Length: 363
Image (cartoon, rainbow, N blue to C red):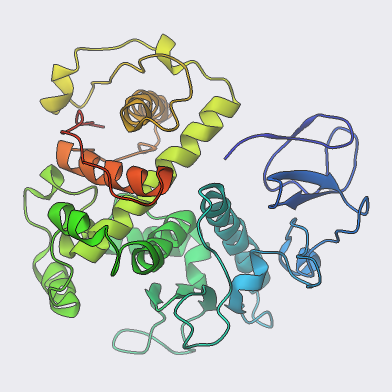
């Protein structure tokens, strides 16, 4: 993500802005140019959801909805109190996820039909009235390009309750979207492609029974040494989940570092420590940024910059009495998995030779 400029006065705009606070101009985000245009200044019009869920994107030519809203199959029931507010929060997170997909020039089209295996669709659903322990619940997940999200996840209190129950140290709407989209892009970019063997060498054999693996994970938890090989405890449950978690983290990292570049933050000026401390898992350690060029195509540079930024942001949060912004450890094996995603997205979609282990990050 980056900062934007008002097309009228040149002042700063943020991704969710529909109006410039400096000059008062109504603005619309145009994903085709990754920038803003003045509302009503061309043949482009606002998305039909502008007054429904605060959408600030332009509608697609010849269509009422924008490129992101056109992916919706089912929206929340707006007759239910607070669902419009929840939908607005959901859409803001979804659009940030879509922004990254478009930035990486990934294929993204709406499902033409339920059996369509190429397109993407979103269902935003709620638990049935009266649902409770043992009753029917809406589970967030992915099935053949259809991504379902329980609208209750838009409520911070419900999300925090679920985070505690699931033993997670991170749970956000944006994280949900990136994770489930990871499952979708595994089908599009890895399944039955030349990348499959390299995937299995790193993540494991995905043909192992998925349902059985998840049942075992929920019954017994993750192995005690999961941090040595995975980015999260849930990633240890099955190679598909390992992939989806790694994919989501790569998008977290690259999106955040793009904002750092947009803010012109000089990560290389932060203090550094002996990189050997990282491998030892010292929770107070960091790594040199190795310069301030953007390094967008160099995974080693991306990781180095991320280690510096995450250590700094975690330390700042602790000073405010807040949880760590990035409460994860990037082990050498997890770093190689992130590198795999990088090579897939930054290259020509042809597998490159995986390099050796990168430094571990202890946060």
